[in-house]
Amino acid sequence: MVEACAAARTPLLGVCLGHQAIGVAFGATVDRAPELLHGKTSSVYHTNVGVLQGLPDPFTATRYHSLTILPESLPAELEVTAHTRNGVIMGVRHRELPIHGVQFHPESILTEGGHRMLANWLTYCGWARNDTLVRRLENEVLTAVRPHLPPQRPAQPGLLTELQRDDAVPVDAGTGGRTLVDDPVVLGSAGVDVGPLVQHPGPAQRAQPRFGVGPKHPGQVGHDELVAPGHL
Picture 1 (cartoon, rainbow, N blue to C red):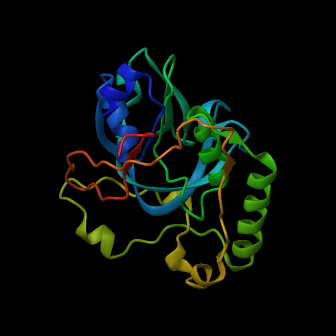
Picture 2 (picture 1 turned 135 degrees about the vertical axis):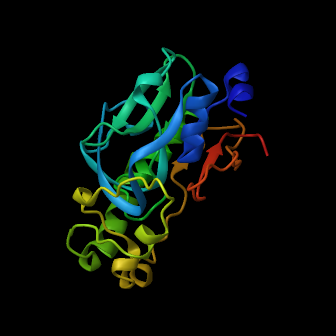
């Protein structure tokens, strides 16, 4: 799918495993990450380009992965657009094509600026961004969720640690992330009408999602996708 979108210059957004698939398609190596984060948050630093334009730096993002694109293997066609405090790649984009990848999950309610990221990407698909609507949606999410968020605290070992593969990827206890499981009230309090993120400018083709999952690596869990318009 990545190669087909590249050949047709079709906008493509890869999330989590989709982000890794973009790296592999252009020659990068994906291997075990130095930290294992499943449904935890951490700070992401970025270069304010592509789908990350206009986000705070750093911002909080929800991560769910045990694999990563190795920085030393990144091909010249791709540039790093986001990373963690300790250098794990959190975002890439092609230098010439409308192809973007993020390792974290912008659709998570605990990821800051998710609406803005998706609106940024939809502009590559021919939609006109409605910044007023994006700001309203961001404020609605913050208003609904912020009072119920648990305080930051170090990640605690548990059953997941016991079930890790034999050569376990170390858990980065220093990230101090949080999950919705920490406070189930969040799920019930976030009844936000997300509505449309953008306004369509005219007769251009409506962007439609496509979801595809590549071969699973041992230890890799789902919630991974590649999204391109008009390729259902």
